[in-house]
Image (cartoon, rainbow, N blue to C red):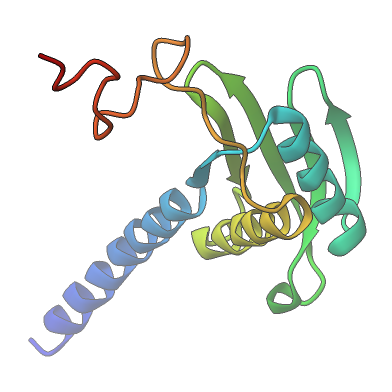
Length: 153
């Protein structure tokens, strides 16, 4: 009778390991994103310099017209193991969207890279450019200032 509980426990552990590892893989394949207030050119160029110059990662492929960088990512935590990484920069209607992907690493590695890019953008380019008011055209007149004919009898 003592064998039955140990067999049941072994079966439970055998089933739990693949489930737990599957959860970790799903978490590692996520990516982090950022809406950049800078221009596409500023954001893409800064991402390229961050990856190649500042971090010294090997650039595998670069496509400016399609807005992506593929690189070999090395983390001190992984013992020098190389994994593939990508940064995508998309210039859309709502602004410049940046996504960092390191599918084989935990998500915080992506966040660290993205935080480095945000800091580098501010360091290199200062305050982001002001956005044009929605609807285009001239900004609305100052609502707090009286019109020139206000109060005239």
